[in-house]
Image 1 (tube, rainbow, N blue to C red):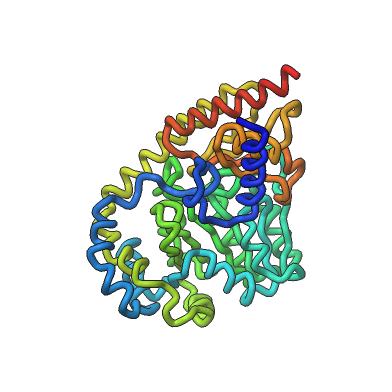
Image 2: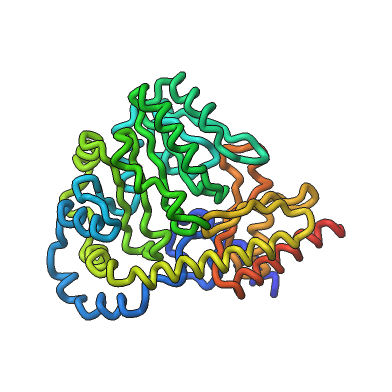
Length: 370
């Protein structure tokens, strides 16, 4: 690589770090964004393109029909569902407009805190190095600060760690007496080893202070379609969120996916199984890197602490991009101790994951020798 090429690569890396998508337009391997590479099936794209004229020329359906489509897919009553233009739209409404005091464990998905006025947010620090949520301490802090909305992302982003279902139920019961809604973001739950036992979808009717958020982009691999939903038995809370939506908040392409999604459930389950297999092999590969602390993942990405002698996370990410054409996320800037020592790597195919593991091992080993 010439000096000019190297400088161009560094310039591209700096530009990519400031973007929030559109990576497919650039020629690098994206181990940063988190989605299912094995879904949707090809026949969905055939169905979509066969209707392209109608989808472009006509208005899409509105919220009541969208809720019915999602309800059919997840076997839940449509009146308990609010469908968003991605989960991000729902987060903006709840964090930015409904929450008077919101508490969220950190590190976590930044948008819950970023979407709220700073004075309305309480960040509850997860203890390093485990980063496990102590729900009893979390509940106590939520009660102390009089939070009306608490958020738990499970599996968490960036740690890929799951909060046990029994712990979440205990948290719900503690918060119920203090008029505090618990939002459990399960956007990555379909990649958990025991998804059916881990999800709270079956508990919705039992806890009126529970709302589940789902970003369908992650498990269904449809980031560009922008579909998310909230599930809650709390009719008042659901209506408050609905009031924040535009009348046509999803386009016809997203609607068409929801119409056909029930046809693909066998392929969907198989795709999630394949993602888990790739991720588990990736975990094993990363565990062979000397000095690297690798957290056992439940989502489709892996959280790692770099060895003390290794370069910091931003430098590792830069070297992977410039020297190996691989883009990962470093955690510098996350609310956590030594954030520059942590990285998050999305799992892709087994062959792509192996390339990342080998490149990362090379970077760490070179620093150790020097």
